[in-house]
Length: 234
Image 1 (spheres, one colour):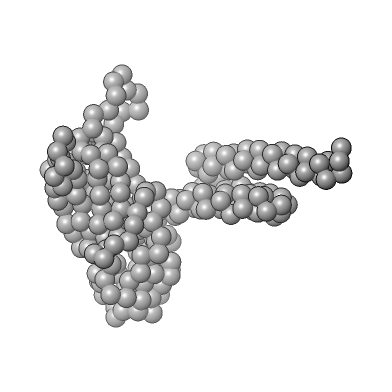
Image 2: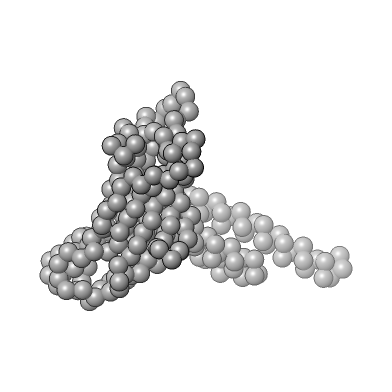
């Protein structure tokens, strides 16, 4: 598997200032084999089970957020559970870092260890190990470069789930207008991105948020109404 297991790492910024930065995002993508065709006549083949990524941040580097998979912090670092690997299927996760100050130049961020479990066996096998780096600089030209559009899109789309959870808590506590406003503003921001970048993925995400706002509005307003009728003895 190691010979065809492909991984790419993409920072949202080309470089960060020598004084450090928070947050800084990295998108990690992986695939085994050639890209899968959209239409399949048979189920994809599992080529590896229970893929894991162990991340060991360097001193002064904090891993603040992991989006897109289950994870836990251990004595040796962060263990990311990435599930089974299917032939030709691409997957991705998003990592959020806080970077401490450094001198100008290429600086190590963390070590990455990819491992998998052999099919029909419990033994875990190391697939690859690599050191991940980022560029520190005081050069304003590099610092003013636009963000990587693919990573920027992943960041914005990953904002939806925690925002929905925040809105749901507001609804559950009776603050229905607050919950509705949170979802509406997020949907509006996604629609602006869809128009600005001519990207239908933003539009589809906005549509999901609006449908949830409508559903929560009906559900929780009905609960408040029924509770009021009960209190009045109707």
